[in-house]
Image 1 (tube, protein in one colour):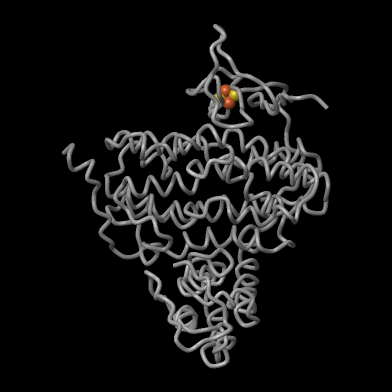
Image 2 (cartoon, rainbow over the protein chains, first blue to last red):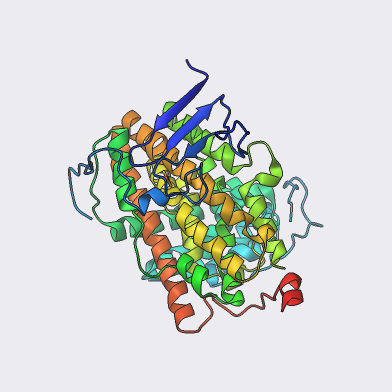
Length: 75
Length: 368
Ligand code: FES
C-alpha cells in the first residue's frame, strides 16, 4: 500500500489521491482545495494544472480509440 | 421549519404552512394532512389511496404531472427534512410510505418505457466508464448553459438559479442514500466524491451551502421551497428521480449510473454558467458555486465513471443494465427540462411556471 496513487485516466487527466504535495516548477506550493485532484494532461485546460473537462472537447486520446462494446439492444 | 416534535401529544400543535401551494387533489390532501399530527391520519388521509390511484390512472405524462410530482417531493421531503414543517411521525407512516411507493412505481415504469432498450457494455469498469463518457459526450448546439453564457438577461439568469435550487439546496443528499447499499470499490468511490461535495470537513464549502450563498448574493430567498410554486413539474421530476434512485436499494445501479452521467455533464456547462454571471457583472461571491464545480466535477466524473459505476458493474454484473438506464434517464429528464427552459427563453417568455418577482441584487443596482 503506497501513500499516494496516480490514476492515468483513459483519454483524460491524471487523478492523484493520497498523501502528496503539489508544487510549481519553481517549488512554490500550488493551492489545492480538495484531497483528490485531476491534473490536466491534454494541455487544453483553462485552470491548469487542474483538469476542467476540456479534454473532451479537443478529442484528447491517450490510446487507440476504444469502442464501448455493446452487447445487446440499441438506444 | 425544523420539525422536532413527535406524535406523543397532539391537540395544541400547529404546523406551519409551507411557502408553496398544492397543485391538485393529491398534493392538497397531503399538505392539509401535514398541518395536523400523524395520529389523525385516519381522518386526514381518508380516501387518499383511491384519489392517488385515480390521479395515476388519469395522467398521460407523469414526469410533467404537477400534482403527482409535487406530491412525491412532499413525501420524499419527509425523509430529507426541511421541505414541509410536519409531524416527524409521518416519515414512516404506512399511509405516506404507501403513497410514495405508488407514485414511485408509476414514475419508474414511465421512465423505463421512455428510455427503452439501451446498449449495455460488458461488466468491466473501463468498458462501463467508456460507455458512460460516450453517452454524455458534449454536443454542440443550443443549451441552457450556452444561453446563460452568451445572452441571458439578469432575470433569466435568476430564473436559472431558482430552477436549479430544487436539487442544489440539497445537493448530493439523494446520492448519499446509496452509500450503505454499496460495498468495496463503489462504496469507497461514492464516499470520496461525497466528502468533497460536503466540503471536505468545512461546512462553508459544502456545495449546497455555496449555492445558498449564491442565492443570497443575488438577493434571492435561500429557504428550501421559497420559489417552488414557480418551478415546473419536470424540474421537480428530475430531483424526484434522484431521490427515488437513492432511497430504493433495488435501484442502486440506476443511482450510480445517474450520478456518473450527472458529473460527466457538469464541468463544461458550469464554466459557461460562471462566465454568464460574470458577463452580467457579478463577482466571485456569485460565481464561486459554478467555478468550484468546474474543478470538482472534472475529478468526480473520473471517479464516478470508473470506480463508482464501473466498480459496481464488476462487483454486481447484473446491475449493468440499470447503471445505463440511470445514466440515460438522467440525460433524458434533464434534457426535457432544459428544452422547456430554452423554448420559453427564446420565445421571450419566463421559464418559470408562474411569474414571481425575483428582484435584482443591490450590487447590480449600484452598478447600473
Ligand atoms: S486533461 Fe482534462 S482538460 Fe486537460
